[in-house]
Amino acid sequence: MDNSTVNSTPASSDLPLHHRVAKGGFWIFLIRIAQQLLATGRVLILAVFLTPADFGLLGIALLTMGALNTFTQVGFRSALVQRKGDVSEYLDSAWTIGLIRAGVLFLLLVLAAPFIIILFDGAARFKPDQFMEVDKLVAKLQTAQEPACIYITKSLAEPTREKLKQSSFSAAADEHLRQNLAEDFNQIIQTHRLDQEEAFQAILTSERAQSLSGQYLLRQDYARANRLLLEETFDLEIKKVLIDRKVATLVLQVMALCFLLIALSNVGTIYFQKDLKFHKQFIWQIVGTIFDFILSVLIAWKYRTVWALVAGRLCREVVQFFLSYILHSHRPRFYLDREKSRKLWQFGKWILASGALGFILNKGADIFVAQMISVIALGYFSMAQKLSRDIIYEITQVVYQATFPAYAKIQDNILRLRQAFLQALRLTSSISFPLMGLIIFLAPDFVRIFMKEKWLPIIPLIQLFALWGIIQALFAAAGSLYPAIGRPRIVSHMQIIKLGCLAVLIYPLTRRWGLSGAALALICGSLALQPVALYLLHKILSCPYKQMLQAIVWPLLATLIMGAVMGILKYNLFTEIAFASFALLALVGLASYCGVMYFFDRLLGYGIINIIQEQLYGVLRKYHTPA
Image (cartoon, rainbow, N blue to C red):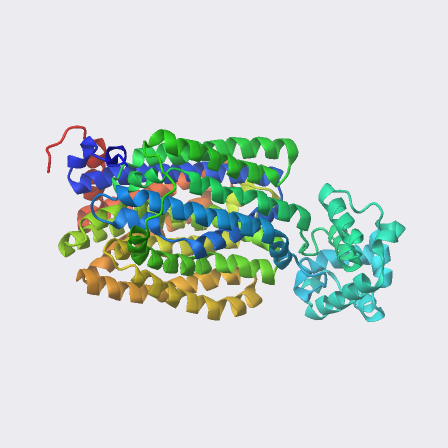
């Protein structure tokens, strides 16, 4: 192999490391911001054309693929970035193993898709907590003007009908009524053939409902066919738990192509991160995201189908596949060196362990929600994360991707490591705290202004996920520190603590508070880890606790002041929040935060202005003196 094709010796490599990190961080920031803006815009547009069920179907595919990917990753990419010196002789082995792995995953997912989907499909039987709007359901049954409602009212047990006569719209709080309704509805779906009743002939108007009904009747699953008719009759009052297995299976099988496209891409792209050449990574990732945005929006606008989401994702992977070979000259070949693979595995196995635990923590709640509540609930859960936690999480990714290769280059210098960590923590805190505050304060108005009424249930979830996002973002700098200094096992051990807390809390909290309870379980799990994280940082970096806490406290206080200013403005000047007043609130909030932080910086010596100036100097500097 010609090493000249892969060895990177850019002119910028003579820059001092902190300037190169600044440039790298700038490009990563652009990548994440551009991706998040495109993703958020895409989600908001698609939310108009698509339903929570559509997002739930894609969520199943991404969840399944994420699980397979995480639990089989070999961690070679991180190992190549962390490894000192020239790694060109390791590239082909890493690419070959990745391709073999992708082929196995593709075949496994295609063959297992029908069985995987069965696990996510809801049961036909009704549960009391699946009657969401009992007061509206009571009103429908009391008036009983539609033929289907008249039929159901007559089919209810006598005690239930008597309770309906006695109840007013306050029946939403009557748990006994929920229980009675669940028992009666279960009796109906087990003993009736609603599809043959004239009262239900006009119920199945949507293409999805007609397709589902045909599938159930074909396999003589009359209970599910009846459940479907009742879900459609009481569209807003009963939780929808049934999914289209045929469509969901095909979505999963088509999405499996992503494994092959990613594995076939050029392994030389690891040099974008290893050598801090993130401007190329910007092109590589953003162009694919733009194609995803355009195609998915066009298909959703034209056809109103989940395939808009699938087509956009596949288009992104195809574009990134071709760009990987355009942007880097390395050409991988199918070759396996066992000794070199073994060396990479010594590091990569801990990336596998921490990644697997991280997946269970981040996606385990999604799986639990889909199983315990419904796939529709998963759609709400996923949307709330996209509009909240994922935005703050971008800060985590910027910090991780910029600091990981930088920490690796200075891993033997504890003093420089401590200085770099504290600087990253201050910068992360100063950006992520105001983001959290804006999301929590503006979430109710944002959903009402920019999204349809069907998405109102995600408001408290958005606010809770903002808290979860800030906890993750704060310790992103530490998350990249441990693997960079060759101690990735620490991350795995810390993830075990979080997983234990999540396992203990998620069931009782979800049972008590539904989706909000699941979000609270994630927050509590992350909070439980923070004392351990502080202790390890203190021990490894000899970093005083006071310095770490000071890096966090002042941005937090400035954010609280920002919230107070926005609250005074909102409740004293505006009677109703529209687009203009929403934008004004956000701008005033940011201005007040910046003003308070400037005061803290000048009066208390927080140092954020110097950090920003240094970062900008590193980004904008064209001429330099070699270090």
